[in-house]
Image (cartoon, rainbow, N blue to C red; front, side, top):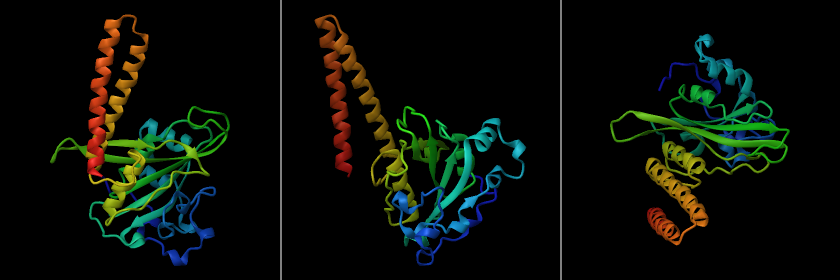
Length: 273
């Protein structure tokens, strides 16, 4: 990753929990790192919270793609550093490849319906450690993922995976469902090292499970199960529409085969827990 871009000054050291009262925590609106389920020790003082968007645009903003510029200027209203998960702030073993995890809030423009993935990509590539993006948006009219007006919050992370050892990584972005800001998905800091904590936070967002021993393998299993469930739903619908006994029997047999495969994957998952 490219680490040459200027980094937020607030990330240079984690704040001490004893020196920061709840009212003095970095927040955007009323949302703080503690509201997300994170320990008070990772929260950043309010004075260090707001980060100028220009910090992430680099020395030559004109070199940014049109998509990045459009999202940075029109979709992202403000950026706040809510917290820093480091060996010091959570009393964990340090990790060379994940020295810290920033909890970065992106306040999106009102009624924005899409994640600013280009901006997430831009910021994530500027850091060696992990970044947990906390995206918030104000909704004034009902939307598919926000049926009632109000403020909503969702998480985003960027992770890289290799098809096999020694191969180049392919990076992907993952998003959690939107939830009312008053009921955010509660995150848990679990792990002996900062790298383990980062993997487990990603598992909570990507896989809806608290911990993972192997994020890449668990993601593969998660996707295999999702694909089988989609196939099963399609075959169930086709079976209901089938006109002949022969076709219904054929579809029933295929459904049973897919169900067995799904059961086997779920059994494998339970055995690994």
